[in-house]
Picture: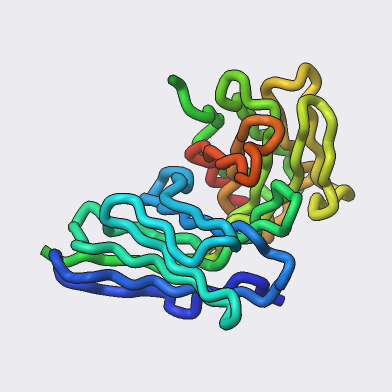
Length: 112
Length: 118
C-alpha cells in the first residue's frame, strides 16, 4: 500500500517554463514533507522541505505547496532549466520520527 | 566536507553467493540508514542506526540480511545467500542525531551500490 504516491512517472517541459510535480499521501500522521532530486548513478540529494504547519515554502526557483485537507503537495520549478532534468522523489515523515517514506519518483526532462 | 562514501559502486554475483556493502557516513552524523531501491521505485528503509544501536530494523529480511555498525561510525550490510530478487541499488544515508526544534534532520545519501544477481 503506497502511502506516498507520485502518479506521474515522467514530465517533459520546455526550458524557461514552469515544472509542476505532484505528490499525494494517505497517512494523516505525516507532518513533514521533503523533495529529493536524483541524477543517474548518484544518490538522492535534498531539495526543499515543508512542515505541516505551513502551506508554502520557497527557495529560489523552487516552491513547495502543501494542501493538508487534500493530502497533496506539489513542487514548482520556475523557470525550469535543462540542469533540472532528474528524477524527483517526494518523501514524508510521521510525527516524531526520522523515518522517511518515499514515492516512486517522477522523471523530469527539461528540453532546451 | 566529504559526503557519504559507499563501496563498491557496482557488484555482480551469482545467486546463492554472499555479498557485503560498506558505508562511511558524514563525519559527526550519528544516525545511519540503509535503503533498498528497486528499479522504478523510491528508496525503502531497511535499517536505521542511532550510533551503534539498530533502532529500526523492522523492514530488514533477517533470514538473509544482516547489518552492523560496531563502533558507531561506518557500517556493513550483508546478504547471504543472495537471490535473484535482491538485484537493486543499496543506498546508505546519514543524518545528525536529534532533531532541530520543530524541524527534521536532513538525510544525506551516498551514491549507492548497484547489485546484480545472476
